[in-house]
Length: 279
Image (cartoon, rainbow, N blue to C red):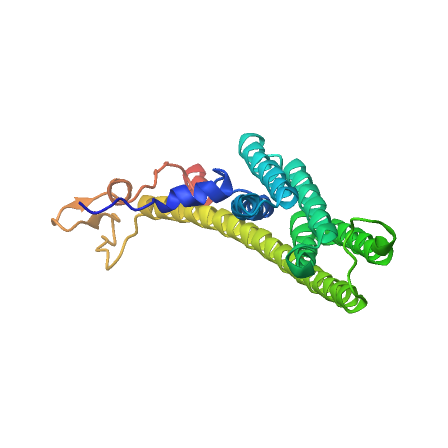
């Protein structure tokens, strides 16, 4: 027997928390980003925690484990409540605190500072361009304050000047790039929404016009069905004015019109006949 393959809808429901395809696109995007970041981040943090604890690096291992628990717990809360703002705030706060902690520890030959370069991506994508930019700028100033004052405190890693200058420069460059990408994405998304609304209005207007045309066509068809016309030559007696039908019978004018049209004949006298009878 062939092994059962995972159903694609299960993977989609895992990332979207069961949101329907026609849900709000912005909410759907944030939900997918949060699920991807928390699930993948939690998995890697779990691996790092096990590795560091096995290497007897208790400080970094515990930090990995605690951050992993917070991230995975926020993911579970997202699935239960759907509160994107709360989960985004908790995930960003936990990530920033963890990045500052590993920055101060300076593990792996003082290379853990590279984790901080992910802050602008996380904040801007989850909070939007403006709020994310403010938080990314705040983290930049925290790094600057740390690099300038780390040598004054025992137990903190002191980085050479060339490292923190390059780190702050690359961080600012990444922040600017992510900000302009998010602004461009938001502008395109807004334009697409406007076009979609315009197309929806056009579709509704076309549907309304089509219904009106259908009603008009039905009225015309009904009118045509009620119309009877006389075609060809009508043999009429020049004396009594009777009309000969196709069977050869002579019928009075009133009888012929009643049989061959929908007209109703009402008898009366014209003004000339009235004068003639009176005379």
